[in-house]
Amino acid sequence: MKKVLILHGPNLNLLGIREPDVYGSLSLKDLNTQLSALGMQHGFEIHCVHSNVEGELVNLLHEHGFDSRGIVFNPGGYTHTSVALRDAVASIESPVMEVHISHPEAREDFRHQSLVRPVCCGAISGIGVEGYFAALRFFMGAE
Image 1: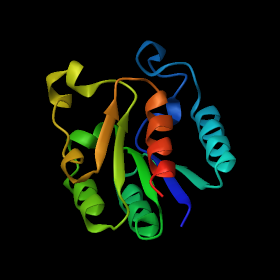
Image 2: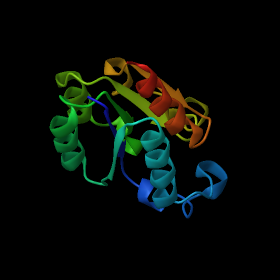
Image 3: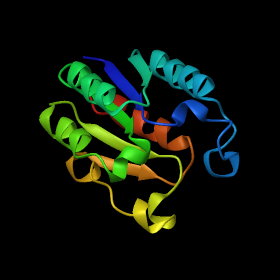
């Protein structure tokens, strides 16, 4: 199985617009294009999906969580609040890498705890959109 899901949570559709000093100037569309191109170069099928809706994110984890090499997941603000997303990640077979563009632990106190991270295979944060590429490379190298 040479498929990787890139799953973007709430507000990531505003990349390039929302707080560019924190999240950068690259749009979500351009990020997805670049991730897909990297995957294709290595023979991987990359599915990039965004949702602002918690239940849709749960459904996507269930849908792709048994036939993907890995899932690169930025749960956005749900990172700190969603037991449902934590349970969805824990219930699937595909490994999940939590990714954040900013470094949540260096921001407001309420962002310091991730409910999702303990059930992930790892986490990358604070290196901008490069975190997505690092997580994708991790899964592509995990033959």
